[in-house]
Image (cartoon, rainbow, N blue to C red; front, side, top):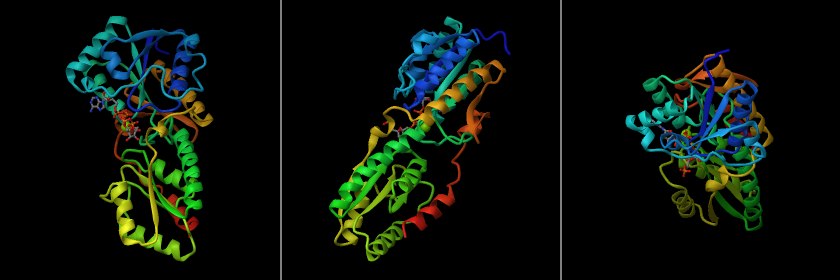
Length: 328
Ligand SMILES: Nc1ncnc2c1ncn2[C@@H]1O[C@H](COP(=O)(O)OP(=O)(O)O)[C@@H](O)[C@H]1O
Ligand SMILES: O=P(O)(O)OC[C@H]1O[C@](O)(COP(=O)(O)O)[C@@H](O)[C@@H]1O
Ligand SMILES: [Mg+2]
């Protein structure tokens, strides 16, 4: 165990995700357990640049495990994207004597951390916190499970109207360039079709599938559309296209938006956040840096930031097969 680590800073950055509070709590309490001072940094990298710090004790994080969002707040900092911004951030770290940093966020956060570490040589360990599940080296990111449940719940409600009015609903979900939320919530909510960024199956195929559904006796349908899907049409244009080319459909669009990022974290996300919070502090104490702690087959492992942010994981082909069979 490294003896020279006396003070660890923790921040949340990028899009907030349910379970971030549970991760901050686990980091704070791990610090208390190992007798290290924990410094909470507000508003992500922007708060780091501006020196918005507060000492966190084990009691500072009471009653947060069940709360959505992040009590440390988050930000998308333009200033941190510049060398000058990162130099300011490092100065602030030195001023208060922070020896190592835990950053909770997504691919952007880890990219920023790589730059800070390379330019100023400070130990940094990451925790994957984003609803998008778009990080390599972890089976799941914190917040993804809760977001899936939120989306399924919303689509269940939309289904009531779809079915009562014999309507076709197009439902847009988040995920940036990843289709994980769309594919999994779509299957979980019994969607007819799912459009994701990882494969462009063409609008023609979707139209064929809708016609087939109607012939088979289906009177209402739900299509889940990932925000980053690649048909070249936005969800409203897609709805218009379907309306123009398939008569007799009463079509509605529902964009779920930021409600997908809110709400109390699921038990899965709380446990995942707790494991990764402990894992991050222990990784720092083992002398690791430039890594993210993730979960693979229930085991907490470390992967280089470069690996975590590299490219996209391949599409889960089995899920596509399951969708095809279960929507017959
Ligand atoms: N290329 C980069 N260089 C430096 N900092 C970056 C870079 N990309 C992202 N960041 C920092 O990380 C923050 C979070 O990234 P963002 O993409 O917004 O969210 P997430 O971490 O959830 O993917 C950004 O607001 C920015 O301050
Ligand atoms: O909250 P904003 O700035 O509108 O950004 C929306 C984006 O943030 C997300 O909700 C989460 O993405 P990040 O975790 O990368 O921040 C995406 O799904 C979505 O594309
Ligand atoms: Mg991201």
